[in-house]
Length: 196
Ligand code: 5GP
Ligand code: MG
Image 1: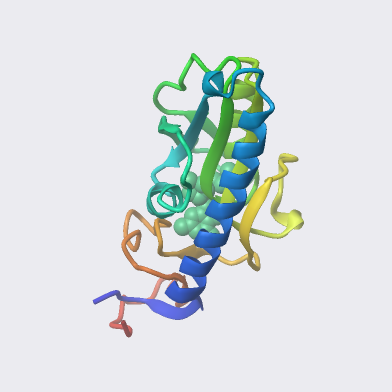
Image 2: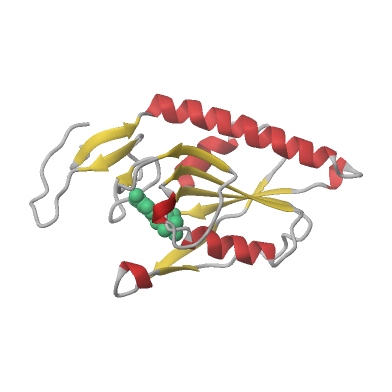
């Protein structure tokens, strides 16, 4: 079924439990922010998932957030550098341009080098939103960072390993694998059948 899965790092029950807790925490923070508005009905909350990796996480997360919010997706592509060090991130489509005065929550699958979230956060901040918060399911260690980015909500801190599943891909595949897993080392080797 799913070739080359070496081991599961975070299983589906642990993910589900964490997503429930994150959704409740973010929703409570949003509610507090809304109540600080002179007219709470004026407060607007916009959740911005970064495609494609945040798709699965976002679908589960928003259903754990009983608040009025709208969803605006953004696609970010890594621009190909000759080395990892010269790689970067750029917005592939359009970023919403009407975020002024709104409470924005950016959702991504993983905080790695920080380049993606640094670009997105800067472009959002230029629009003078009421607040910007970042939520990631996974966070690699600080040593992986090339840009300083703090995530306000983090599901799991993981080692600096390449992971797939629950929205994260390898070469476009494994996004539908329901847990977070590590692939078997396969550089230059034939692809072999693995469990689950
Ligand atoms: P950044 O390096 O800009 O923080 O992360 C950029 C993007 O690289 C993430 O949104 C994610 O899509 C991808 N990425 C980073 N680390 C991993 C990983 O371990 N596995 C997978 N599948 N994608 C990753
Ligand atoms: Mg991504």
